[in-house]
Image: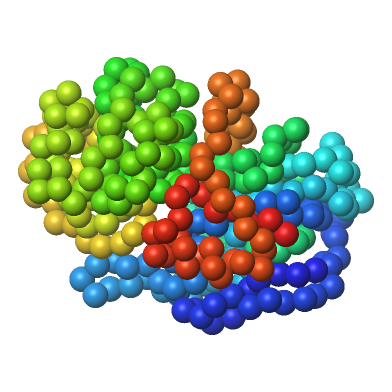
Amino acid sequence: MISYKLFEYGKPLQRVESDLPEVGENEILLRVKAAGVCHSDLHIRHGAYDLGNGRQLSMADRGLPLPLTLGHEIAGTVVQTGAKVTNIELGRNYLVYPWQGCGTCAMCTAGHENLCPTANRSMGVYQQGGYSDHVLVTDARYLIDIGDMDPTEAAPYACSGVTTYSAMRKFDADIFRRETLVIYGGGGLGLMAVRIAKALDCPRIVVVDPDVRKRDAALDAGASTFISANGQSSAEDIRAAAGGRVYMILDCVGSSETVEQGLSLLAKGGKLVQVGLFGGHVDVPTPSMPLGVKGYQGSYVGSIDETKALIALVRDKQIPQIPTTTRKLEEANEALENLANGSAVGRQVLVP
């Protein structure tokens, strides 16, 4: 099989040709039909998260194995199953749930493997991922039947989709259906959030991004307003677009600037949920949180049940696909560079 692996942090991926892996009794081998390119892949290639104030969280310290095949947004066709695998059809397309934990702790057994505190087996992070023409999945419970859905459409729901879906479920449901949602970031994650928020009946959505090239994509996705973050009056513009008071902010960027501005914008009882990992550091006046009854919560991907619920929502509401550029597998490095320099609009998906 052909895979694109990271051998050294900060360096381009390398093409590797190898034998197909042996399939264990509980395992499933898929021929990859689509693998989404995510900002987390950039962080992994870089080798660290920026913690602000000159500090970093290195991937080596997190225990990531090199060489590593990147790619955690994976959809593919089953070509081989282990002897003990049941209810999985050869030749059928599935979405892979990549956020796998130890499988035995309280969080994992409750269905929240993405919150596993003692171990992590996430694909494309700790296990080999989808920048390949084949991928091995450790258990049938991680496969979600997508039927006749296009794999290039389905693949991004394994990360950008379930990340934004899970984050929006952390807002009060009544407030969500009544107030304006402000989204920082108009990239693939932000556009996915707009689509899903519309399907969840959020009445107004404001997208904030410094790149005006993303304006049309945001408005086409269903945003009520697009605001350039470069404007001197952007804070006032955001508040005005939200009807005078901001109760919900979904931060798909996660920089010092977006979090600090977002917390300052929140009305009494408002909440900011951060999913972006751009990096930085914020100083928060501690009395402002209880006095403003403000909420600030991080949200990391989502559970397998949330992923299944999202796929059902996509089918039920016929959520349109966000702008997607398909690229050949051998263009993996070019796709990462486009993501890094901000020239990609929507999602890029590698197709072997």
